[in-house]
Structures are given as C-alpha cells and as structure tokens.
Image (cartoon, rainbow, N blue to C red; front, side, top):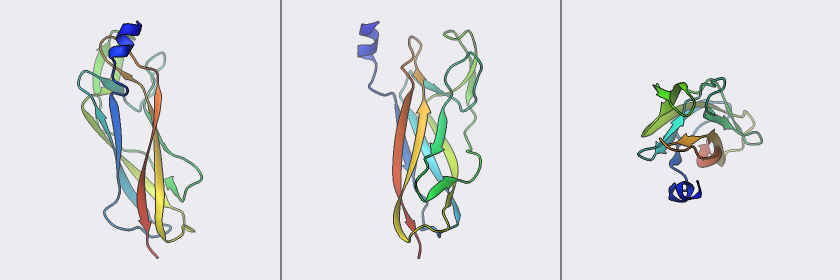
Length: 146
C-alpha cells in the first residue's frame, strides 16, 4: 500500500478562485468562480451527499470575514458512473470543474481591499485508490468600493 501512496501526487486537485472583474459595494452581491483542476486519471466527487458512498465535495465561505454565501452554489453537471470501490453509482468530476458562488459583501465592510477566503473539502480517487479527504483554502483580494 505504501508504494501506491508514494506514487500518488501530493494533491491531484488544484483549486483557483477568480475574483469579480470590478470593485463591489458594501451590501452588494457578486459572484466568484471557484475552479478545480483535476489531474488526468483522477476524479473528485460532486456536491451531492450519497449514503454509504464517497465523501462529497463541500464548498463554503468561512465566518469572520466581510463576505458570506448569498445563495446556492452552482455546480457543473457531474459525470455519473458505476464506482467499483463503492459498488454504487456515483457523481464525479474529471478534468476541470467550475463552481459559481454567489457572495454578499457585509453592509458594514470597510472600503479597500478585503480578502475573500473560500474553503473546499473533497476526496480525490483514481482507479486504484482514494486519498484521504482534504480541505483546500483559496483566497482572492476583493476591492470594496467607497
């Protein structure tokens, strides 16, 4: 088993957050795109929880910042396939998955550059093994208009 893990990449999923194109006003809503780039031969699971199944991907905006999720996250349509590891049909992403997050700026947010931090917990697997679930934190500067 150790030999398999040694050959596994440190993390087959790379996350990137794309900021809005313009500054945002306090109290306003805007969207950001969270991009998951999955290495060839690997996949991660969709946002849909499955009983007795793999660990679903979860995305959130942590407390304690001047931003909060303002609605449901839009996810791309996952592939549905039979997963021999779980002996069931699962929903997964391969290649690239882009999630659209509606975000609201706190009405009392200070003008200037603020840091938006988005977290994603996920499990990545290939045809032979699943890596332990991980949480990635990505951040991007957002300009709050005066």
